[in-house]
Image (cartoon, rainbow, N blue to C red; front, side, top):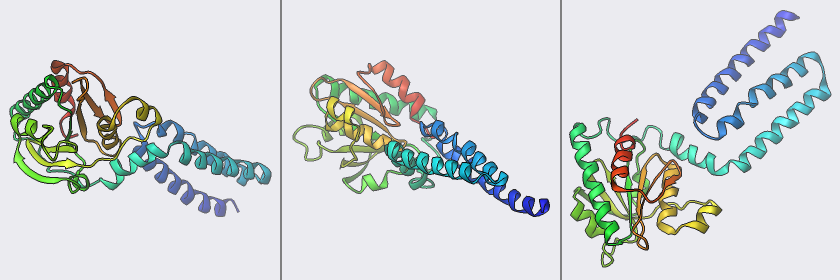
Length: 253
């Protein structure tokens, strides 16, 4: 009888270990990880209750697991959506294996993009600039007009001029190329964000919730520059600080 029980127990434990291990890796670094870490304990208690023949206690733990998971799906819905798009849907759809030819060319590009943001800021011209990293932004690129031109501060500036037909949308950059302009992005759904910021900032936060892209936003009202990554936004950034942040963040990981 003991051997029969072991033959049933070992495969179940191995399967659960495999599932929890990979699920933990998927959720690591997110707020869901703290929520998830209690699940193995609940499953262990439910299994122990079943083994000892405590039916009522087993039912209690099973009900707790069901309620815990159901509540998590509701409470963490935005986080689950971001994980799906960023780590599952876009997984494998990466841009090219190399990222710029060398560090010098990457540094030159960062200086140029910072110069463009500085010019837009001084003239209080609103802008939304998306920098593609690992996740392919193909779905968002297709919503705009394909440009596919070598980046220059002057070209980027002209795309956001009020008279430009593409100035209301986002410009998406891949390395040192302007891939598309006038792109439509998903908006952040947080109630707090809706109250505090306008459409450009909400779009910048929204696209970084679903992908690992960086979003640069220039406010047309104040001229202040903001940078969004992983659904979080740094506000009112000075040019020197912007360059330092981009040198750290704008690379393949």
